[in-house]
Image (cartoon, rainbow, N blue to C red; front, side, top):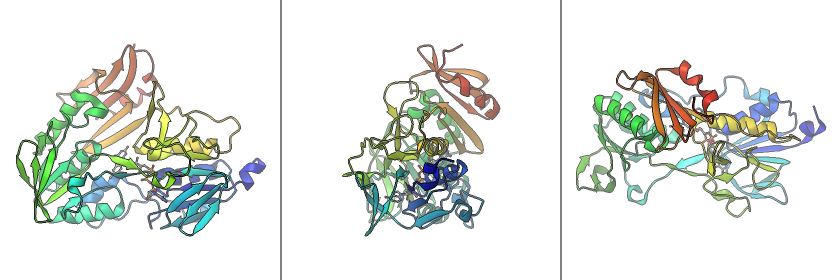
Length: 390
Ligand SMILES: Cc1cc2nc3c(=O)[nH]c(=O)nc-3n(C[C@H](O)[C@H](O)[C@H](O)COP(=O)(O)OP(=O)(O)OC[C@H]3O[C@@H](n4cnc5c(N)ncnc54)[C@H](O)[C@@H]3O)c2cc1C
């Protein structure tokens, strides 16, 4: 162990998946110096994916912990219910409300929060889903609802629609684009997912948008661009998210829809790194930058940052992006970063039988892979992404 690893102080902002995995990996790498984790939520870190799935339907389900072992083993200064308010980069101090903590390395892992367009603000019955309190409130709203409108057919919106339908509710999924999930998986897979929802009895309305809400302050209906009014006791807004970076606005760190990093996780300040949903990385195989909002991306970037915080020769992010989503008892898994208009080849199974593996490609390069019900074959595609098509 180097002297630096035993003496240097690390401060992690955000006690979510990326913050916790950074702390765990630092300890595993032999960092014995002080590690402070500052988290705005009052809870120990918990797992978010179950919040749109099983936990949403089971009134007795508790927060799913992210760590089975004792926290004491990690020897963290865990400051829960504490919000970072700023950072003094030259002084290397994280600012808290009325307090400050010095650091040698700072890790920003503050995640994102759901967007709420103005037309939904202030209405009773309108729900978002990101944290435990959102989940408990939505779970209790669904328990007494009859009609649910889910606005936004991205991964989260599709999952909530499937879960609500599983509860026997009347569910409508409204999407501004021509298919669910099309920005991430393209129109063919989007169309397939739309078909799964329709087969389950969900009304899927694409290429339209919500123009207003009906009711007396408590939502009773949702008005669409063509004038159609859908009855609704509950409206779930799942139209994307905003990175939690306001507290860094005057810090001098480079921000651009997230905290801008190089491919080692280092920000525009050499002592500050970023991981998880809030971090913006260079695209691994193309121009521009990307911000992953997936569980595995949070873990991969946390591990990268932990390894690079004190490294003399930092390593670059090489993990292939991956996410999964569970809907109607099926697991869809995807690898890579395909563009919506990349070509798609089904290479095993078929869309018609509902079990398939498909590759995306563009200009002779494999850009991604997607599968339903074929986890093994999908995993084998990892090495193909970013390489010439066979
Ligand atoms: C309902 C739901 C279902 C999901 N399902 C899937 C799935 O099926 N598959 C998949 O791949 N991914 C899924 N995800 C995405 C995955 O959970 C996220 O990518 C992951 O949680 C990101 O971790 P993070 O640590 O970057 O952010 P978070 O988990 O959001 O943690 C960030 C933490 O920082 C705190 N914070 C923010 N600002 C401050 C501040 N100023 N000071 C202190 N603390 C602050 C926040 O309160 C939060 O606790 C899902 C997400 C949600 C919400």
